Image (cartoon, rainbow, N blue to C red; front, side):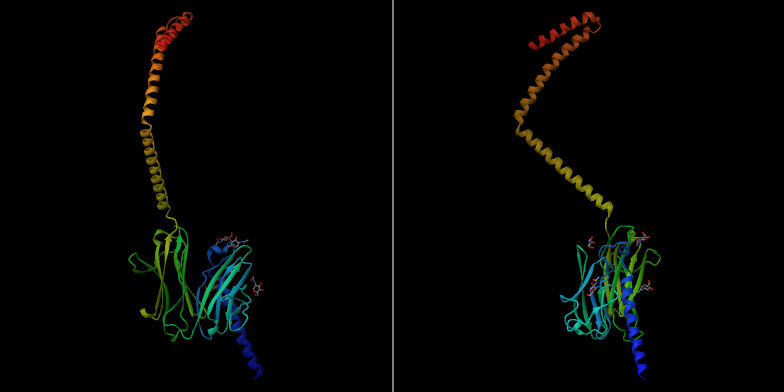
Length: 346
Ligand SMILES: *[C@@H]1O[C@H](CO)[C@@H](O)[C@H](O)[C@H]1NC(C)=O
Ligand SMILES: *[C@@H]1O[C@H](CO)[C@@H](O)[C@H](O)[C@H]1NC(C)=O
Ligand SMILES: *[C@@H]1O[C@H](CO)[C@@H](O)[C@H](O)[C@H]1NC(C)=O
Ligand SMILES: *[C@@H]1O[C@H](CO)[C@@H](O)[C@H](O)[C@H]1NC(C)=O
């Protein structure tokens, strides 16, 4: 009798531990960001949840999935772990998850509050806040735990949206729970995601015994058609009243042509401004120095004129004497220079 009870207890403990172990470890290992795979700097490795719900008396995990940290510290309402008293929180570190997870087997009202995980490496600190609410019964409307965030992605890049909500325990087994991504047209019409498009896909995931439901919308290669607004709709049953809608946009990160055009336009505009200012300055300068300028130009024109006349006279003189033999040439050339001197002195 006694050993039977002990066996049962042992089995129960083992099951609980196994469930804890499996999901706590798998949670941070699954669905990590593609970019985190081959990088080692300190970072969160998947979407970090900021709002959590738990039904009183149930299991609860809080995760801060990360890598590259030297230490990870947990705080509740500013008090650091280990909490000095049981009145702070019943959540404890999950031993086998590199301190990324804290958990409780039996959540109660004292566990409510704001939890913070603080990651540190030699030079930096990363913080994340998780707010947790302990509720006494399943909600009528899904409660958002992670709202999708806008993504800025280039053509050919990849994007991933995530949405998640707490639905609690289903009161009746035949109540359908659905979570689905939709595309919103420019006039906000709800359109379904194109099934023929190989580059876009949805994946539904569950946490904590199916009490939390989430969905990834992944676009592996973004084309112009993919840009726009997406809607994540979570429904309990098939009713409009029990529905949660969350939206986020896929935005072109770098419309190269448009950017280039605007840079070009800016340059042309600035260039034109500079040219106009330069011209105005030049004419103002001319206007102010008009008399001086006219004197100067007049004088130099006159001087040039004189010089040109002299040179022309000498030039034609020499040209005229060109065919004459070279020995007499020098003598004649001197004659031409005489003419030059004459003109100069006249
Ligand atoms: C997590 O990963 C494991 C192993 O890769 C896989 O079997 C399991 O289905 C994944 N779980 C979820 C919720 O995606
Ligand atoms: C990570 O690096 C390995 C080896 O360099 C490569 O085969 C793999 O595709 C990379 N993974 C990602 C997600 O970039
Ligand atoms: C510490 O983490 C930050 C943020 O991830 C990173 O930029 C930095 O390179 C890291 N420093 C070291 C010494 O690893
Ligand atoms: C994990 O937590 C334990 C207990 O608080 C601490 O001794 C250990 O240094 C922590 N490890 C990391 C990597 O933060």
